[in-house]
Image 1 (tube, helix red, strand yellow):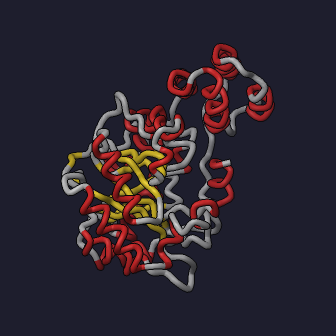
Image 2: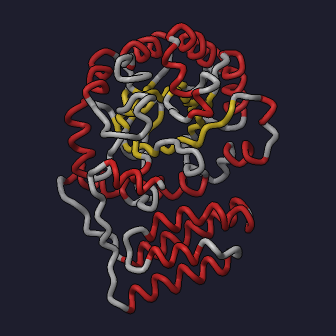
Image 3: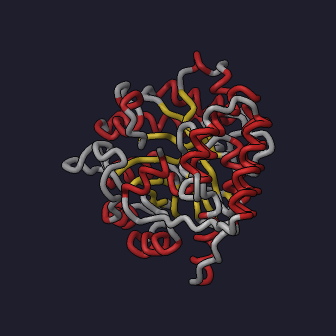
Length: 344
């Protein structure tokens, strides 16, 4: 796929997710078939550039390109500065967050709250595009602020006029948060109204759903978030299905064990032992959800505070499943409730 000047493996994108899409997860998803992975949000507040948390979020060492960094904020000048800062440090794509529904973001008029002020949106986008003339700027939005005020098409036209090169749309309003089912009619309308690439996002959790969303919206690509948590191989499953019309065989238990173990090691190396153990717990929970004995295993795992102990526990859990003839056969239901559980 050709995307904002880069040749990607395919049109499948990893959605930026706070606390999830760190460097280990992005690299893993790319290895498992994703064409592009966008980083966690990086604040536009220059006072935070020196924090360890921000440095980690902006760390792309060893990550296959193109490197896409997402910035968030509400002040045009600060967002422009943040874009320049990241571009100077290796960001090859600057993505602007106007889709996050979290209260702590929206309360400062950032994230999806910005969709209420189309004039401010135009100022922000123009300022960022001017700030990094040699770096493509993309935008992530929702369908609107609430169901009465769905203005994604208007925002998309503003973005295109300001020089934004591509747009990702989550099929819910800010008021919807992650409740209910994503709708794709608004995304289809945006596709009809702009000439830049549009990436569809929301509730894409199976190869069949991926095909249906592409057919319904006419979008140029798909962005997958919560469904990839504990299931990064979903990208190769979708890639294969879209290319051949056939499903790949279910991943064997031995491969899930290997992927989980390697991901765990990368997390420990990236964050250090103390923080790495804490970060790893949620990923281990996602990898083992639905497997026999996983609830008791997760409770025990959450008490461990040592990387080696975590690794040994993972090995013991999967070895026990293998000896019992277990298989990785978790069903990804198409209901919103299951998607919420995957994100828990």
